[in-house]
Image 1 (cartoon, rainbow, N blue to C red):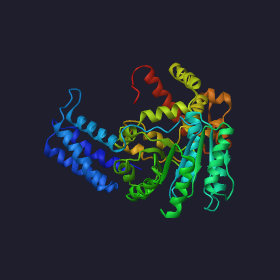
Image 2: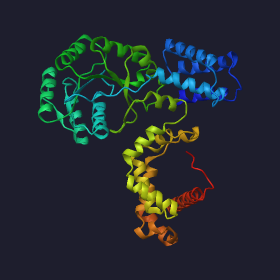
Image 3: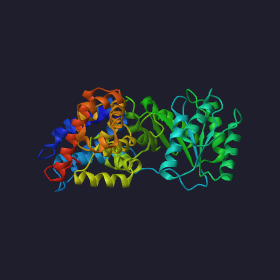
Image 4: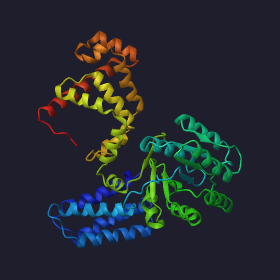
Amino acid sequence: MFESLGDRLQAAVNKIRGYGKITEDNISEVTREIRLALLEADVNYKVVKEFINNVKEKALGEEVAKSLKPGEQFVKILKDELVELLGGEKKEIYTAGNPSILMLVGLQGSGKTTTIGKLALLLRKKYKKNPLLVACDVYRPAAIDQLKTIGKELNIEVYDEGKGNPVEIAKNAIKYAKENKFNYVLIDTAGRLHIDETLMNELKDINNEINPDEVLLVLDSMVGQDAVNVIEGFNNELKLTGAILTKLDGDTRGGAALSIRHLTNVPIKFVGVSEKMDGLDEFYPDRMATRILGMGDLMTMIEKAEEAINEDEARKTAKKMQQGKFDLEDFLNTFKQIKKMGPLEGLLKLIPGVPKELKGVKIDPKDMAHIEAIILSMTPYERRHPEVLKASRKARIAKGSARSVEEVNRLLNQFEQMKKMMKMMKNGNMKMPF
């Protein structure tokens, strides 16, 4: 979502990195480019004006730290101001209720029903909670069926009473959750194509009756400047505790996320980063700021690795790498664990210092499947002893995996290159890139 904005900001920042000192002239040129980048990204004009003024004031008035060059100091100021603009500290989800009650609201088409399933999955995986989904959207055709399908896919229970009264359904669901030891109740409410009196009255009735711990607005990040109006429309009636931005992986300009907190004081708590059910992340303003500025996001990458990679297996693999005994079976196991962390192009964006060209690479999941098919077509002995793979064996493997001999050779060459690189690292002739 922020790739275009990030590229523009990074290009502007690179101009000032080599300067021996920051002056009003050279900083005016850079801040002019930053201003244009933000405006083109659909950030609210008032927000841009205040942001630029703050950056200029701090950059010109700042004593340069001894450990930093003037250009680096400017980047630090820019990053700190971006973090502040995005909300400063991360805002935690409420966890103290018994059960905790989350009510999700939003306009029709914002992805609310899918998001409630993603949020339930995140609560179960990360916080080890037992969530209950509640179907209170009784108007949209197939909304209840959609939620039940999501619940079945995730093995999360869905409470529904069909086309009943949403207020009564919500009340009964909370009673059911208490009796059955659910510690989260996630209520999927009705949406409309626009904010109207009927929608708001129903939401207020549910809100007043159940007194939820969180009222979260699900907002399509592609709505641009209108995001602020939507938030204010809901917030004036319901007192939102947070927002969930969906479709952050889409081809949008990103201004909504940079304007929301500053203009409405409603914090962003979660962001949708892919269409998959595990594609919802907690929102960290500092991590998002470093991503926008091309500094990567190692903390998110570490968390994804901790969640997806088996620690014992990783230790064994690392030991074999150090001993020079890494084989195709280890490669396959490592490959499978990395796949659990998400699309590779998404992971590349989290690594600091990765060239822009690599960040834009689209990796076809089919190519990944082909690699896996080739290795799985080998015998266990061949995986452990790739040196035995001569022409006849390669032909058999190609036929078994429905790939070409050229593809088999290419994979083996890449594997050999990887082993050489590991050997160089082990001998101290080469440093890890990060």
